[in-house]
Structure formats: structure tokens, C-alpha cells
Length: 468
Image (cartoon, rainbow, N blue to C red):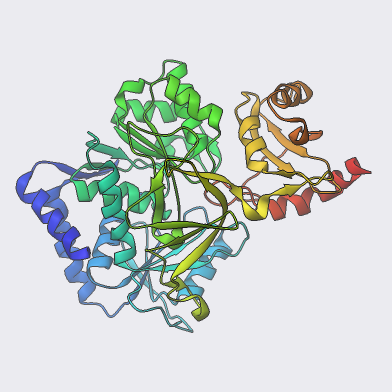
């Protein structure tokens, strides 16, 4: 598949020499120029003895060129997520045995690793999951893992009339790397890579809406990969006439559970929302709705490279499993993987995600409640910036709220949301927080997911005080 990818890049350069391939704030490259830059960098890399390249750069044309060149040289690429703490970055370098770091200016900084861990055969990329704990795991993937996904996505979305994809997520996040960049280049499209400042992104959870809308209007992308929170921003932009729904041809949503009311509102506005599901351990995407025929509330049917089974209602995947976790030989070469997600199929074979197995709250009355369901509804309230819902047999369902305006009435917000919930899922208590959840206080992952264990530990005293 890697050779086929190289051939497709060459074919694009021959057939459409003036077609833009990569664009950022500092440069733009046609497919011809991309081929030339890759050829030069491949020659440089092949003259070195470095085997494991840590990629420590922000989203840019250079990030993509290095990523591709390292892969074409059959070396190992180790992207370092920009949202990792300094300690996590050091751990990645130590954990992976990286012998060189590619810096933001494109220069190579040699390292002297004290240990060089063995890798599964054919490892081409080590992608670090943001994880729900502070110790991310390195997922070892082959080029077949990556491009099997690209090929399957091409079958599902390749006929959508997009020509320009805008990168929003950090490229160290596998979903954007594979389904955003690789897929677009495979299809011969243009990839735009604005800086986080230009997009109005602040860390993993902050967004300047005006800057975000301005960037989308400036670049006029036809496809985006969005988290539910970013889809919420696009919906707000269209509702407020800052954006035109007709400019978009494909809005792929993943990374977290999509609240159904938000999905419905996006459809009502004419936004081409397509929900999918995946995990790094499977090379990214597992299932994806068919554009122009999405099933509300589902993530669509499994892609052709994926076999999905339910075992005791938990989703298991096989067909494109990772090579294994770094430094965990017992995990190498799995035939199938448990995802930790509850799921079900509808009568037409569409997969529905019912929540995280480990996140399910069992109430004092023995009812199972998915906190992401409640959080999704609360996050749709305009006054709510962030929310986490906690509870168990001793602690009633409690919402920890970060409000946009401290004058907002939290009780009214809870009352509105409870009207749409069955009685067993009613939020019975709430606490208004003064400090947002963030990567810095270790209450968010780099992709914006809640670190529930950390949040519970931090707020347990006030939770138990309410329960007694």
C-alpha cells in the first residue's frame, strides 16, 4: 500500500502539475514541488544512521514532508503531540528510544538514548494516545495499518466532491494524520495547515470563535475533521450567519460521542455531518457513515477493512489491529481487540456507540447511566463552557459545571436539561467550578477528553460532602 501511495503522488504530479498539495502560512507546494521536496529530504535522511525520528513540530507543510519522507525511507516516525507536558515529552523520547528529534525549524537534534526498546516487526509509526491517565501509551503501527484505513475510507467517501481539506486537529493525532492528510493526498486534493493561532485554538479546550470563523471563511475548505465541540462552533457560526453551510461538502465528526440534539441541529442547517468511530490501535477509523446517507445517532457501517463484533455488548475489532504497544511484548500481533466501548447494531447493520464501559455510572437504585449522554446535553446549553458528570451508589448524579458567565443560573440550566431526561438519569446535584478543566491541571487529555479519575480525586471532598 505504501508503494501505491507513492505512485499516486507521482501520478498526481504528472496529471495535475499545478494542483496545490500543501499550504500553510509560510509556503505552498504543488504536487510537483512536493515530489521534489520529498526527493531531496529522502536523500538527506538516507545519508544518516538515524532510525527513530521524533517529530516535534507544530502543524505545517514541513511536518507533513518530514512525516512522509521518514516513512518512505522505512524509518520510524514518532510524532510528539504539542499538548503533551514537558514531562510527557521527555517520557516519549525515553520510552521510544528516539535517536533524533526533528525541531520546528526543520533541524535535526541528535539524541543518545540509554535504551533502545525492541519494536514489533514492520513498525513505521509510534503514535501516542492521549489517554485517560497521565501516562500515554505508544501504539506501534505499520504502513499497512495506515493505508488499509486510507483505502477503506476512499471506498466510503472518495466520490464526495471535495478538493480542499483544512487541518484543525494536531497532526500528531492519528485521525487527522490519516483521514485528513493521507486520504487527501491519496485523492489528489489540497491540504491547508493553518497555525493554531490563526484558527483561534487555545490549548485543547479553548476557542476564539471569531478567529475560527475568519479562518474558515478565508480558506474556504470543503472538508473538516471535527470533535463534537468544534462541530458545535461550526453550528453556531452558521446559525449566526458567520459561515455558509453550502461551502462544506464533508464534516467528519469523531473523537468523542456526538450528542444527538447537536447532530440534529447540524442536519437542520444543511451541514453535511458524517459521524465515524475509531481508535489508534486500529489505525484510526473503524466505522463511518456513508455521506449523503448518514443514519442519525449511528457511526455507520464498519469500513471494509474492519470486522466488528459484539461480545457481551462490548465492541471488538479485528482485521487491521495494531502491531502492539511499545514495551509490552505480550500485546504484540493481536488478532482482535476489545475497544472498551459499549455498542449495538441496528437492523440495517449500522453501529451505535452506547458509551465507555469503564465510565458507566451505577446509581444507588442500580440503574446504569452513561455520563457522556448527560454531559452532551449539558454542553449544548449556551451558558455551559465545560461539564463533567460524576456519581455512583453513594454519590448522586452530580454535574461539575464551568460556566461562560458567572452570573448564569446553574439551577435553571439543570432544570431545563432534566426535563429531557428519564427520572433515573436526572442530575440531582451540581457544583459550579471557578477553574476550567485543562491539560495544565491534568483534568483533560490533549484531545479534550475528561480525565475522569483525576477529576474525581480532585473533587471527591465536595462530592462526598453533598452525599452526606
